[in-house]
Image (cartoon, rainbow, N blue to C red):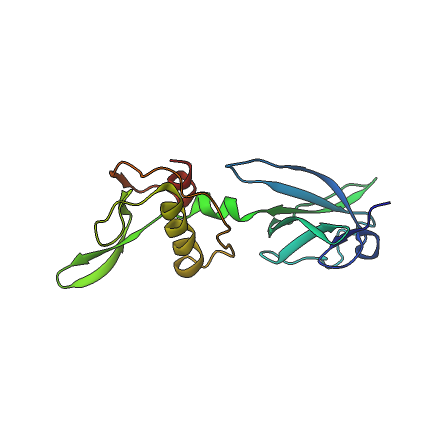
Length: 171
């Protein structure tokens, strides 16, 4: 039998159950947890924007941030839910930017040249994705890190304006 954990604790000890989720590649994934012993007036197990990790047999299956804390109540029942989104959701809401020289200084602008580094050298798909992930983690503060990936083909240089980090990665 599998051992499930939410932030290191069993779902039963937290009074939670996994209601469902949407797991996607190249788009935001979500998990929905629900309180088993819902009390509309009780404090919540998780706070808004709290990090949540779900493991099975100590293997990380999902990691994200609490984005919704819906509650409902009627004379017959009360529920308390938690919607957790993965980092891809934040990549979809974050505009990718590059440093541009303006009047002798540097400024981040949402105008980018895909397929080229800051020195004007052509780069491959893997290097472009690494730049996007570095921007998301270091500049935008998204809790994400770049894994290993194949370099891929060199990109044909193209201009993009006001695209999200997710759009740039998909491109």
